[in-house]
Image 1 (cartoon, rainbow, N blue to C red):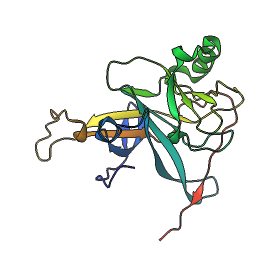
Image 2: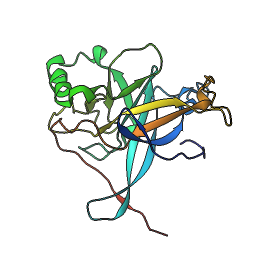
Image 3: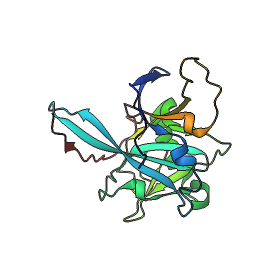
Amino acid sequence: MPGNPPTYPDQAFDGRLYEYVTTLDFFTDDELWSNSKTRGFIHDRQIVDENGELVKVKIALVWRQGQLFAVSNTCPHAGADLASGSLEDIEDLQLPSAELSKAREDCGADSLARTRISGSDKEFALVCPVHGWLFDALSGTCISNPSYTLDVFHTHVDTIPEQGSGDESITSDEHKRVWVSRDKVNDGVKGMRRHVKVKVNRM
């Protein structure tokens, strides 16, 4: 998990509300992740559920080859933590392109729910660490069993303005903020979804 970075209020980008999570260097620090193929962690988000209760839900943020994805952390099949899984190249897996195309069409323009930091344009499947089921990281559809779907969120990266000057010329990753959209972006994709909610005790 990231340390204790400063907090920021929600902000709107492209007409969508985003929550601040951490700085980009958490994902891009090669020394920190020297023994890991995929770089991911679980973000606890507080929401008010349909019963008016304050609860926490878990979002997995996963980084690979210059791309950042955010999905529901709970596998809808077995309830596993997906942040502990891996991202595999869809082309290498030789997956059925027709099924993926259909799921992404159902997402509409919001299907590309990733932030590309570097030049990589590869497409990835998130692999559940328990049964090895595959989920399209862009649409959330379960490639192994399309009757299941993950919530998918947009990610956004911006630069922290230098205090007092408004200068946004700093380019180091420790000065770049990672944001995750408040709303999921794949409502159009059918499939069973699963959410683990933990009640938060109000002070």
